[in-house]
Length: 187
Image (cartoon, rainbow, N blue to C red):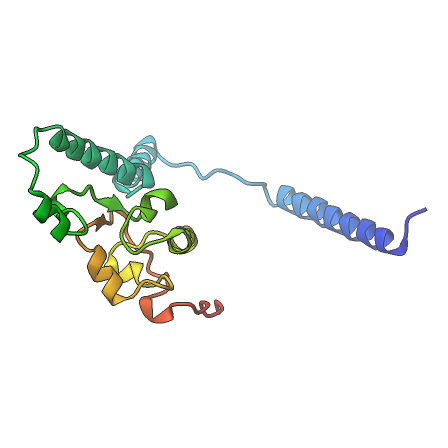
């Protein structure tokens, strides 16, 4: 014997099914989902417009392909013989290697482990960067990166020579002013 809640759920599903049958009967009585006939040239023109839009749309795969190409070029440059090592005194005077010898990290696609390799970024901040990117889309620039809680202007300036951005920031993504705040509810 069903409980009152189960009876209520069954009644709800029966009502939904009855409405579905009614809508289908109404559509059939009006002629169904007829396809509007057009000339073959109109159809070919519409297909060409759709194919053109698909071919020219920015896609994540295109961004990744560009990133792979850029990384391959950098790897080829790294394989060139390096000049003689600097003196020990010069090595002690700089904490990080010069930016020209550092491979750039694309923050729009990099993993948390790769982001952790950047100076002043630990596991917690790397996880926040990845979570923010997954929630709101690519950063697109250093300004977009500053929307992450814990990344300010000073840190963005220190990362400038070590990071790159291949994605395009979403228009509805929060800005650095919205840091740590929820987005307003949609109207």
